[in-house]
Length: 256
Ligand code: ADP
Ligand code: MG
Image 1 (spheres, rainbow, N blue to C red):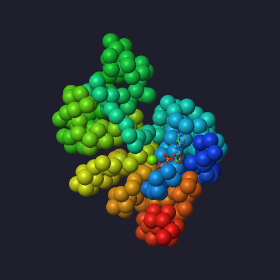
Image 2 (cartoon, protein in one colour):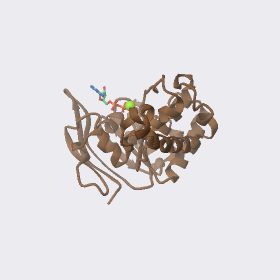
Image 3 (cartoon, rainbow, N blue to C red):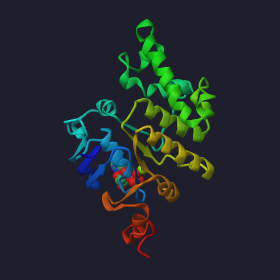
């Protein structure tokens, strides 16, 4: 059985079909790319997968868990091991960089995030453990986040905010990490470095599904690529196969 099994996932927004009978298997240990033009349903897939939007139909199963994830609440889905980043997310500006990363681990601490951050004795051990784990995860990015750990998050550069988001997602110890356009707004050198970071994360045993516009990033990262258009899977396969598919070329470049 695959790590993640998605069957006939469908999502309507009023009269608009954002996802139409989308099915997908994700294997443990793989890095899977999702491409498609703007509005093709990529982010919607992550939103319904993580319970942020309720699907209109379909089933999602994670290996080892009986329930259809679509009937499960977001915090339970995170606890089962699916973590994500967002296309346009801001950090909690008044928290430090370290605290922002620690927030990602709250689903595993007893007292919840606020007692983990601010609580007294009861939460103290949880907080110390979480701090250590947050620092370990931040080390994926060398000194870039670690050297800023006490700085307020608003102090971070754009690229560091993206790194912070990924670190926060990983602190929840996911089996699958969902990245929504992680290199958006990064320069080529930063993108290249992020590719290496994502490969390191994958080597920690975390499967990755990455939505990306930059085809160089997709080529370097993904063993398998899925192309969406109008909420439907157009083609699925190795990078070169998908990139040269006439329907993919048409969806990106238009019929003319
Ligand atoms: P992508 O991430 O591939 O660019 P999205 O999944 O964000 O595309 O959007 C797919 C379609 O669903 C688009 O037509 C978009 O306008 C629509 N859509 C997405 N989210 C909402 C929402 N919350 N309310 C209404 N329509 C939405
Ligand atoms: Mg999107």
